[in-house]
Image (cartoon, rainbow, N blue to C red; front, side):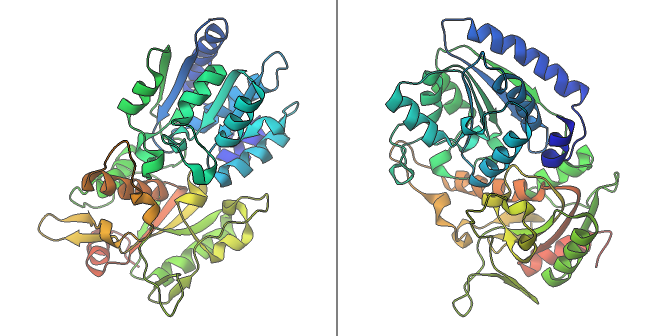
Length: 389
C-alpha cells in the first residue's frame, strides 16, 4: 500500500492516528454488516487531514475480500480517474466496482443489487436534489446509497461545499440519515501541507473575511506574494521542473477579452483547465502547466506547489482591512443555481465562493504562491508579505 499512498497522496505510510481511526472504523463496519439496520460511518475533517488516505486503506481491506459485496463511488470526474488508476495498482481489486454515484444507483435500482459496504469519497459532492441533466432522478444520493448498502462509509468536509445542487450542512446530513445508526470519525491533523497550524489558520481567516495579518513564518512551508501573475507563473514553472506537480490555479470572474475566456492579468494569459477523456487526470498531465486549474480539476488532489491567482470576485476593504467577496463578479453561474426545496442567502453564496478559494489555496504540500487580480487587495498582501517579489 505504501507505493500507492505515496503516488496519490504524497505520504509514505499511515500515521498512528490514522491507524487508530481505521481500527475503530473496522469495529463499526463489521458490527454494521452483522446488523439488520442500515448504518453510516462519517469521516469528517478539513482539507488535507488525511480523510482519503484512511478511506483508501479501508477500500483496500474490504474491496479485495471476496466475502463482501462492495463499491467505491466518487462524484468528481478527475478523482474518479485517479481512483481507477489506484484500483489497478491494488492486487485483487475489481476496478469495475469503482463507480460514479449516479451510475451505481441507477444500475443497482434497475437490477435489484445490494451491497455490504459502499465507500464514498468527497461525499459533499453527492447530489442532494434531483439532477435530470446528469441522469439522476432521485431526491438525495445519500438516501439512495443507504438503501442499497448495510454500511455506507462517507467522507465529508462541509467547508468544501460550493454548489447549490450539492449543498450539504450538518443539519441536512443528519436529517438525511434520520433514524439510521451512525458514528462520526473526526480527522483534525493536517497531513497534506507541511504548514503550521497558524499558517493554515491564516488561510482560513483570509477567506472568512477577517482582518489580514502577516503570514506566520514558523514552518518550512514556502509562502510568497507576487506583484504580477507573470512572475508567479515563472516561479511555478521552475518548481515544476525541480519537483513536478506544481500548477497555477485561479478562482472565477475573469472577463472575456477579444472573445477569449482565459485567465489574463499583466503579462499572464493562459486558458482554463479543459476536460479531457484521457485516463490521466489533470493534475498529473504534463500539459496542465500551461492551463489554469480550478476546483473541478483539483478538488481532492495534492500538488507540491500551487500558484494561486485570486480572481476579480475578491476585493479589499481598507476600513476593515479585510478581503471581501463580490458574488456579482463570480462568473461561474453554476454556483447560483436555484432549488425548489430551499432558498440560499447572499451570505451562503459568499460562503460557497470562499470555500472555492480556501480549497484551492490548500492544494500545495510545500508551498503557496499568491497574487490577486484586485489592485488594492494585491497591494495589501504585498505590504504584509515578508518576501515581496
